[in-house]
Length: 168
Image (cartoon, rainbow, N blue to C red; front, side, top):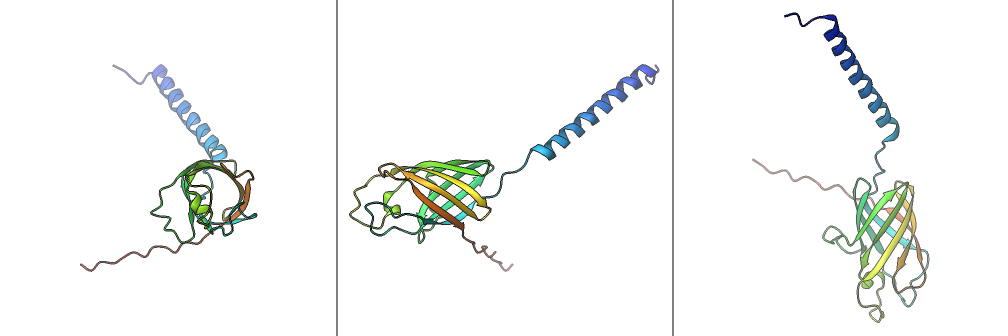
């Protein structure tokens, strides 16, 4: 039995060549068109451009974002709150340098005043634009507040957690 005839060698040569060309085509496409989204996870200090209506003293706010590809979760907390223990209440997506979040936020986070008329969690929609990797501008729309709240946010540097060395 002679398996090395011209027809079988031609068939295997064409099959291997086709696979190599297909692999090269997919590789070039991936390198040119498939890009990882920018890394935006972290803590961002929010600075509101306008004061909240019916709120004498607004809290300083931090947006704590967690990222998985283009999908985002976030929590809006006060500066003093421990963001790691705060459950993310906002869900969002990152598309073309634009971030959008929606969810519910405790109104006490937004305003320090105890006489605030809002008592239950408020629906919030946030639209943001990445200026660079560490700066974001955007607006917050809170259900029950007629105006949109414009803000800028700067990424806070987080100190790296030191690794504990355990003696053996």
